[in-house]
Amino acid sequence: MEGVRVFSPDEWLASGVDATSYAAMDLKKTLEGLAQHLFGAVDMRWVDTYFPFTSPSFELEIYFQVCNLTCFNLHNNLLVLCSADGVKTN
Image (cartoon, rainbow, N blue to C red; front, side):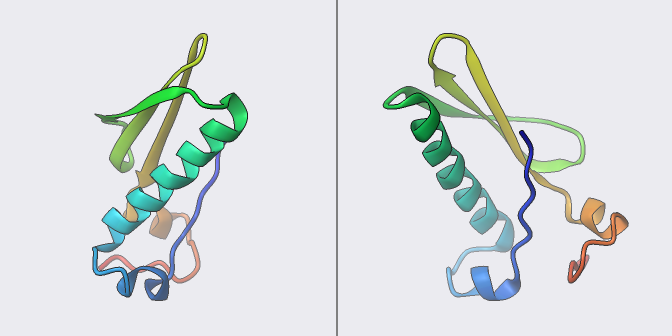
């Protein structure tokens, strides 16, 4: 399963954090909720990692049989190259 979410400045400006930090916090909260919905009350932890075309990159380790959830924020320039509406490079 894959998904993409592009935030507008209105969504993160009022938070007091930069856009990347806001997106990372939202991503983690969303995926933790998904993991709990799918697997119930399981132990999990976030691991900083590296994947090309993403920054920052994380893995969510879920301790349920054998399962690993990988997630990341796409580089803004990649979105621009794909012509995502409203994406700016600055």
